[in-house]
Length: 299
Image 1 (cartoon, helix red, strand yellow):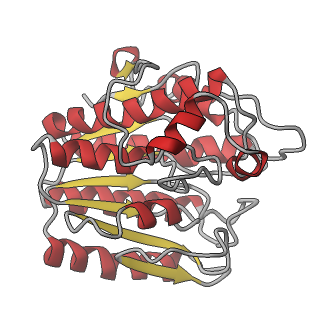
Image 2 (cartoon, rainbow, N blue to C red; image 1 turned 180 degrees about the vertical axis):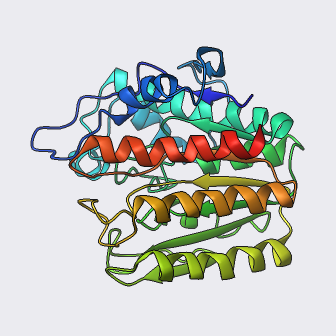
């Protein structure tokens, strides 16, 4: 069965005035077990120690980050107040994505309850992202001869500007992002392929675009591994999404991604990304659908 990275450090105190539910990181594991989608023995807790190469990030930035010496401007951009717990959390998330990816090479798929910190740049934090877990994990696989060509499928509603920036000169990784055209970040960094979607894009438009585009990428780039950022902030209920996809449309998105990767025998590491519906039950249902889909297809 697939492995799932999770830790009690993931829930982090949200800054005052933050109006979006973040408790999904704490609730999701219990909901997955309650519904019988996964079992206890599928979860693993990554260490909060630095054990992998983070040098894709600027050394000066990492020094300031790990010593709680970010500027006030950087702290505001990150969305978090600096603390030792925050740093431990970010390292655990990154370690979980790396270790999950290695596990996926053996069984086809793995998950991180958190992760998808695609707004982190080489030298600065942004948008609840301090260490770019998918970039670090991609370089870990490539530099340790575990993969030769990686595809990052970023279907969070927000463009992965940090990921695009950090990998713009890395030919072994193809970055693909479908996101809200008028949504955050307002300054987009060019991915290998960006598909900006207009406000109120519905299931039919969204899925038609994905069904056409992803097979073409696989055919041309021929990756041997994929990272999938499965944000559920594409939902019509989402406070930050601006798209109009339904729970069923979001589920069909996941089914298509998993099925086509399985058909091409491409292992995939999944991170959860965004989800900001005011009703946390909707977020949990959408995320649970992603896990359920993978369980049904791979086992």
